Length: 306
Image (cartoon, rainbow, N blue to C red; front, top):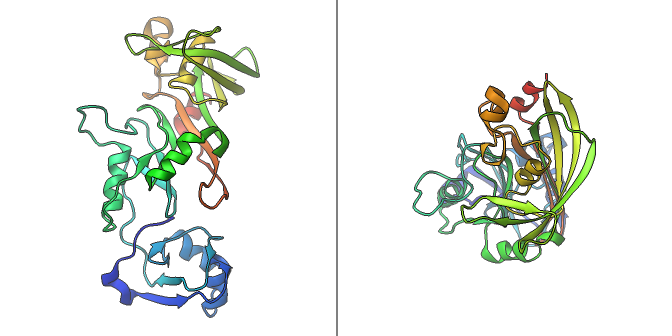
């Protein structure tokens, strides 16, 4: 993870100079007298280690001769504290966060409400840096889970232009209405938007974009199913539309079929849209390292299937 060094507090850090190539964890253990592997991990996880004035938490971060490593005597005071967003990973190029349901990824036109991007913009500005983060992909307001942001426009463009090659695994988990007929399956269709901005799909080319969703039924109980989705494509509203096509809309998705008229009070029994982006894996666009992140299934989902 990465944030920026406070020059005024320089006397609160112990400084070391890198003399030969090494990974950060090994450097700490070789350099700091008496430090254990557990303590070195603690320094990293608690955002106490700086490399060239940026906080790094990546244990195998490659160091080069001449770089300056600084270890804080106290925990960093500029951590992100938001009820909507939790930082999962950060380095000099990327931020991966977990967002809660109920907040937009980006602001809509004319909307001044808080959104994930504005929260992160404020976070990086507090580090005395005059730049904004750049959205790599989005989640709907009601969807919770993992989101990726870039710290530079060229990094954002690299993801945009090479998404299929860079992103190696992207999965969601959802609770859907009814008990799924199949344990596994694939939905393939072409998705377009209507004049009312409602996405719809057809099994033939309707002039829209082809969408492929693989699904795996994890559990069936109480008239619901817990389903995992692996996306081969990343179209707007893809999972929502495909589950509507299968006549198993996502719980709480009133826009695509989970209506009170059809399901009564059970259309939204937990008061949220039950879709969660739980896994994200990709190759780092700068280092080439394979990064993989997961978050647990929300408690609200499992409560429906107990």
